[in-house]
Every structure is written in structure tokens, then in C-alpha cells.
Image: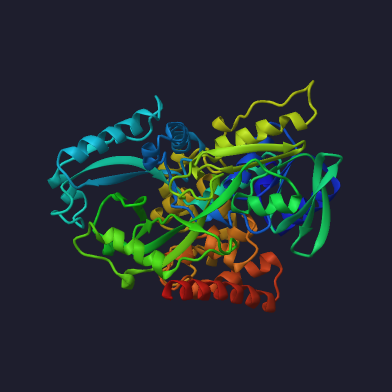
Length: 553
């Protein structure tokens, strides 16, 4: 029964909406990205009564559109952000070892060198410091210097006349939307009340103190008054707009920086390692993504457009291709493009003239009025520290002087699916026999769901068709689509194809060939009519059309 609290589906959402209108919470969290999810988990594991509301889908914004890296931020050393880098590296080690070994994986990167001595000395010193800053807990290997010959063996794609050597170092990789979903569900496991598609309209006040919020259930349009002793806003790129709507003068402002990534086949770039390339304004990552694809990005440009659905444009695509081609022996082109996506970074800034690449990625916690805390900035990797700081800031609003509020315990709290992960990997052959799929498929599922794979057995037994791929050549099985709606709160075809899976940017057709099968699987779980299923498909098709048009302009 306890584990059932982690299940997100229509029945859970209905119960959560009812709780919002009838119960009083210690903390109400606004925002279902990684920071809001982390706040809900931190508060729930301290024994606090917490609710989270998200106006769109969980991880619908920045938290599903990152570089998919858990890293210290090597380039931030040049900006002397040593505190941020050290903090992020400590968090990286925790995620790889105990918090989320099923989701966060070590990944090697090559830093190509263009001179034999001077650059090797300078870059080598920086990467040495990068290794030192992580402290004594070291799950990932130390860096190593590579000769010209070794670089060519590791990455034959690099032009040997331009790249004269290299340094290999390690960071880690994650599917950001899946990781955020597991944080959300872990918060649910510890009692958090969770709802998506619930929009905060205004704050409720008692004098100067904020005592809750007026919320609209976007599924039916009903208005709900949520009572809470403290409200914490983790709205990212929406922070400025919500501060204005709530009539609160914040002590910071958030600027948006657009980051674009493209996806190309592995065959387009011949390398056994990822790469980090220095550009004139920032860095560019060439990241292994699945066995047959590369993820390349990112850009870093000021953005003032639509927050809801930022789009890559032709200039973004051309810039990425131009930069990576500077070191490749065989250039890539637009014909190699399988997909692209854009995300917006929330940067804390007080100087409008500052370049986004110069703005610090450190976070700010603000407590402008009693009962209201907001947080912004930071990096995906440091979400847990940000969450802890936000909850710590809210403690004075909770009115628990005698009992007090326990310290954060999330440092030692594994995410859902992490327990027994390595033992399950060793049992892949047995699990494959139980599920009726290959051992390779089991390993892929374990690296997405961890011990949640046990939930699959009974579901597949009831419907054996779910063990099949959803379309020819697709790596995702029907059970993953089913699970998205039965356990992970998906409420549309877009939720499934953009975030519960990554079919949107992994398939050459943006997942259009999968929409009918996805709708067929999730319709009974969501209680859809045929008309509702078609409407959800059309919504997704419109999104894909807008994406295609944007990169062709």
C-alpha cells in the first residue's frame, strides 16, 4: 500500500485535487520541474505535509530540454565559479553512487587540444582542478592525457591536422525528464500530494502573510483554494511573470537563455567517446545518446519569446553544425539531422546588459514576504541543494518552534527504482525469462525504471501484446507507453512522446508513426473517447509541424 503512493494516474490525480481543496499543508510548491520536484521530496522526507501543483506536465519546461548531463560545469572554472563547480561535482558523485545509479551514468569526454604544449598545460591544469574539487568521494575515474595517436584511435572523426592531442575526463549523463519524474514519484512515496495541469492564479493572504493560493484545475476549470503555511515558488523561467501576477517585488529577476540541441546518427561522427569543443562564446558538447545517436549542443543566446514552446530555428541549427565541423574530418550537414529541441535556462540577473554566458549559474533563495519563498537560477545537477535551501528558508513560516523541523535527509535518500539496482542487473537473464523479452531489453529497461521493472511482470501477463515494440524499428515497448499513463501521470500523446519517452527527438519522423499506437494504449487508462484520442494526436501533430517549420526558415 505504501508503494502505491508513488503511482500517478487519473485516480491518483482526482484524489490529489480533492485533498488540495480540503486539507491544510505545511508547504505548497509551485512548479513541477526538477527544482520543484526536489523541494516536494525534501519537505516530504522531513515529515512535512506538502503539496505540489504544476500548470503543465511534470518537467514540461527546462527540465526536459537540457543537455542531459549531470556535471560540474567545466567551463564555469573560467568564470571562477569554484563554489558552484564543487557543489555540482559532489552532487554528481552522489547521484552516480547511491541516489540514482539506475538513471545517472558515467560518461567519458574528450577535450581536443590544438597545440602540443601551451594548451595542454593550461587545459590540463583546469581539468586537474575539476577532479580535485569533487573531494574524497570519487566514483568516476580521474582524467588522463592522450597523445595525438591515442586521440585518433578514440575519435577517428577528428581532423589530425587540427587536433594534435587531447585530455579525457568523466562526467555523467541522464534522461532529465525521466529523472525528474522519479523525483516526483519518490516525493509521492513519502506522502506528497501531486497534481499536474493545475495553475496558480493568485496567492491567498491573511494580512501580509501568504497562507495559500487560488488554483484552477485545468482538466475541468474548477477553482480551488489551497491552504498552506508556506508557499515555495520554483517557477524557473516563469518567475518574473508570477511575481508580477502575485503582486510581489522580488529581490532578483530571471533572464532567459535559449539552448538548442540537434540529434544526428552515430554513423555521422566516428568516435568512441563524447567530446567537448571550445567555441568563441561558450562550449559545445557532442554527447553519445542511445547506441545509434549523438546529441550535439548547446547554444546560449538571450531569449524573449514564447516561454511555453521555445523552438530551435535555422540559425541555431547552422551554428551548431558550423562549430562541430571545425574539428571534423568529414563534416556533418543538415541531411544528417534526425531531430532538434530548444530549452530555456533561467538565469538570475540584475544587469540587463550582461551576456547570458557571463551570468552566474548559482541559485538565489528569496523570502520577500511572510509565508512565501521563491528560488531561481542554479543548475539541473544541483537541484537537491537548491531544494534543501528553499525548504530551510520556509521553516520560519511553519510555526513549529517546539517540535521543530528535521534537517534535510535527501542526501541519503535513494530515488524510486534505485534500491537493488546492481543486483537486478546481475539478474538480467532471469528477468528476461520472466518477462518474455531479451536480456538486452531488460538492461535497457533497468536503466530507465530500475526496480520498477517488477511492476511490468503482472501488466505484461495481463496483456502480452505490451511486450512488443510500438512500431517497426522503435526501441520502446508497449509496456512503457502503458506505464506512462498507469504510473507516471501522462495525460496526452505529447506527454508520452516528448517526456515519458524521448521518441520526439530520437526518431527521424518526430514520432508521428507512433501516435496511433500510443493513443490506442493510453486511451482506456485515461477514459478517452475516439474523438478525444484523435484530438490528442492532432495536438501533437501541430507541435511537430511548428518544430519542422521553425528549423526550415
